[in-house]
Length: 142
Image 1 (tube, rainbow, N blue to C red):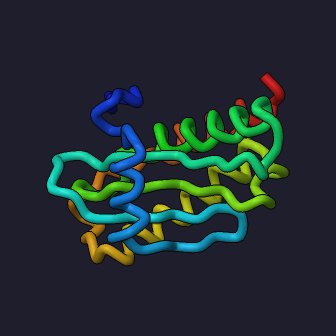
Image 2 (cartoon, rainbow, N blue to C red):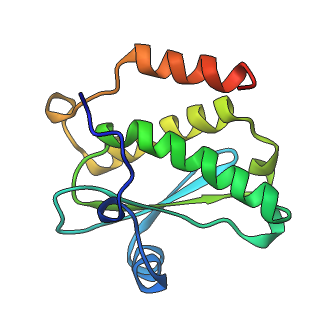
């Protein structure tokens, strides 16, 4: 079974790590989210989430961060090693539900994999059953 945790070793910690990604990395735009990414020399991808105050009050921002974090946690096995990723929501992302957030992050991560030129054979993909269960639970209102 895949390790489904989100420990500190797979998170960007501190403003300096975010700055490196913003300054030296590239950007992939989605309809409601942006992905900034930069290469690193580590054996696992690292993720960060940057949600600005313009997206609403603390309750709305934290809800959006939880949705993004959960999608990243489920999809992290399909991301190539050696990359730092920062997810930056646009103002329209505040209206997204769990399912739409998951699907958009999935699309952006697929674009990231293509941009890095990582071969598909060496990657671990998330089983469709896990995606279906996540989508069913997120839309059921639990």
